[in-house]
Length: 312
Image (cartoon, rainbow, N blue to C red; front, side):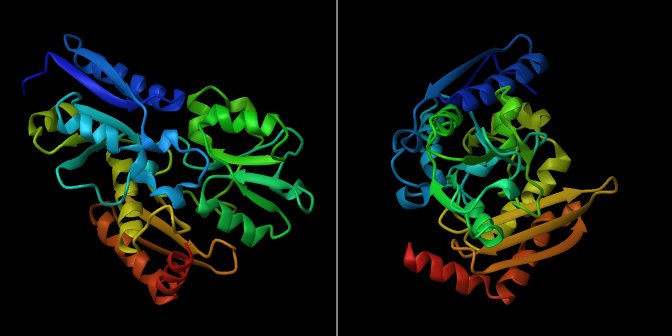
């Protein structure tokens, strides 16, 4: 393997994205001490449009398009993403070549007044940017007032602190990576809020014309996490998963490599919540995702998704 003399990492410029890029930079620097590793910070369309929900402005791809352009034009060698922000189908010419070890995959309940979701009174305002979270909240706590919440982690917290919301739901991993653990009141269990596909894991993307980087970046891959995320993304892909559809997928692996995948599809108003589960060995992660997707489809998930998209 020829170790490159220089690597450039493309990243969004939010504090969380830069933490993630620096984390990968430090790992690569340890692997390849002689390599000069820099970060190219970029502002994406998803970062600029903050007055609309993601489902209304084109979805997750808005957070990675500019980074992919930098890869294509050789201004950067690799891009670091939160896997949950990566579309299920990448554009032609791009590939995910490594998935890092997963951090906390669960959602966090954040509030200045209340300890738990169950403590919120009728009409309490809860902020979330995710239809997945919204649907599960509405199903379990129909008395709450769920409102959209966009912006980076600090912006969302400041809106809570300003009194715009009684509580907000954020990804635990993001808060922990930014040393904001003290803001977490409760970690929500999968029963309360099943995570998004890939939540808590980082993905490394390259342009496919850079096959020279595949072996270089392979040490960043965590096989157990990669198998789980592969199953989750296969489920979401089979059901046309996007942020316009309330869809959740969470997979765990035991010590023997047996995967257990839980999937969920819901109507945004919480009136319909479909769940399914299956198990398979890690080498069959992709097939496992498709099998759980089929179970959900057989229970009516396709009709729910069509109804949601027709009303979007």
